[in-house]
Each structure stands twice: as C-alpha cells, then as structure tokens.
Length: 352
Image 1 (tube, helix red, strand yellow):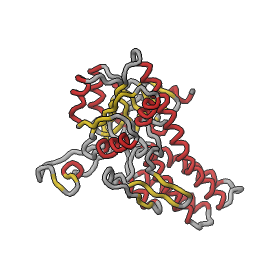
Image 2 (cartoon, rainbow, N blue to C red):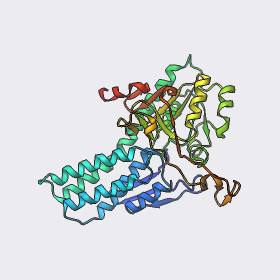
Image 3 (cartoon, rainbow, N blue to C red):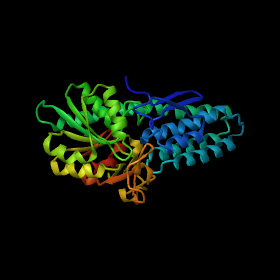
C-alpha cells in the first residue's frame, strides 16, 4: 500500500510532515491558506504536484468555513489567496497553473447570475477536490507509459536497473508518484532488478524520503551519495535514469532538483537513456526555454547544518539553489499521462 502523504475530507486537511521522516511519522493539520503557505515554504510538503494540491486544498478548507454570501467578495479573496500560495515556492509551475484555472472558474461563477453563493462555494470546492483523484490517475498513466518506453529500449529480457534522483513518489504527489510511479510499474512487470537512489543533498530527499518509500514498497534498492553517480554508471549496467520535474519549458528544458543536470550529463556520456516523468501540469508552454525559469534559492543553513549540528566552517559563504535546468538535448523523453514525447515534440501533446 502506498504511503498517504495527504489526508483530506471536506473541511479537514492533514499533511505528513516530511521534515521528520524517516524517523518520525506525524501529520500536521492545515486549517487554511496561511497554514498551507507555511507547510509548502518550510518543505513539510514538497514535490510540484503535491504543492499544488495541498495549496489548493488549504483554500478549500478555509472556504468551507466561510459564511460569506457575497460572490464578488469571495472571488476577490480567492484570487488574492491563490496568488499568495503561489509565492510559497515559485519554481514549481503546477500551483501557478492550478491557481490560474481556479481564478478563471471563480470569475465565471461570480459573473453568472444564476449561480448562488452556495452553488459558487460547492462547485469551487468540488473542482479542487477533483485534483486529488486526477493526480493519482495521471500518475498511474505516467507509470504505464514510462515502463513501456524503458522496456522497448532494452535488448532481450535482461534485468532492469534504474537510477532516480530526489523524491517523486507518494510523498511528492497525491499518490503513486511520477518517476517512482514508473519504477512501481516496472516492479509489477517482474522485470525490475534494482533501483539506485541518490541521497540528494543538501535536503536529503533521496536518503530520507525515496529510500523510505522504496523500503516501504519492498523494492530492491540501494542508496548512493550524489558524487557516486559517474562511478555507478561506469561499473554497473544502468538501464535508464528517471527523474521528476518542477517545471518543463516549451522546448523541453527541465527544472528539477539540484544535481539533475550533472546526472543527465553523466548519462549522456555513458549512453544511458535519461527520462523526465511529469504530469502535463508541470509543462509551461508559456516559457520558450529553461533560462527563463525562476530558480528558488534556499537558506544557507540547509547546507551548513544537519539538524542542530553545524558541519560547515563558520563564516563560509554558501550558494544553495534548490533546482537546476537540464537542457532538452540531454533528455531522451518526457513521460506524461498522454504518452512519452521527445523534448522538441511537446507542442504535439494537445493533439493526442
């Protein structure tokens, strides 16, 4: 059974505090938008799909308690709160696209005189709730398409060995996962021999979260430090690299957790296929290329400390970008819920 990172019923939202994993399992109540912004910004919840879902659900929870009977005021408050939520972590595009869609919905409902304030609230909250169901369905489709694409590249029926980076499973989505969803699908075919996951410094999402999920799912796996990737590809036959994405530009350039770019370079050198697994909500067709993606920079403390223990020399300067951009030329394919596309073919998705 997949881990449950988001617990939601109408009017109630709890998220699994990922800062405490793998040593503690504790859920945090999210009572409204302010709480939603904090758990996203503090990375108690992370992963582009999960950020969008939790942010929007925090608004749904707040709206459920709102007794406002003026549709115009509700519309104004919704727009302001959604824009505020987007500011919590600006690199991930999913929440921005969800916010734009919901703001358009609020504008439509507000302008329709046949829609009562009660109807407005019900239809708006129901739309947000639908994001949970759709995310899991999309992730399973991503897993299926990714599995098929990887198996097609292999000769014979030999073992499949996958390298992944950061965390892209149930903890980063509503459930099942994107890149980890591909790994789950491979496991179901009985072809998966082994998974290697990086520690993913400085926040250690691989060591803390991906390793936690792989053990939970009883998937044969090994944790490696980030600097071992080249040696791994040189000494072990890796079938493919599969990573997630926080934002994909129209030309296929992809922003993902810091360290992804260097893994892609290493994969290219060793002839290992490099796949990005991401829902369509992670693709930003408004951005022509990756150099236009805003890269979030995180606090120095994430590099200089482990818990309360300082590991870096006092006084040293730090540069801590949370993401890097992998050029489309290094990407074999982008796995979506509509199929696998070459980076330069993303414009064809709408026709599928």
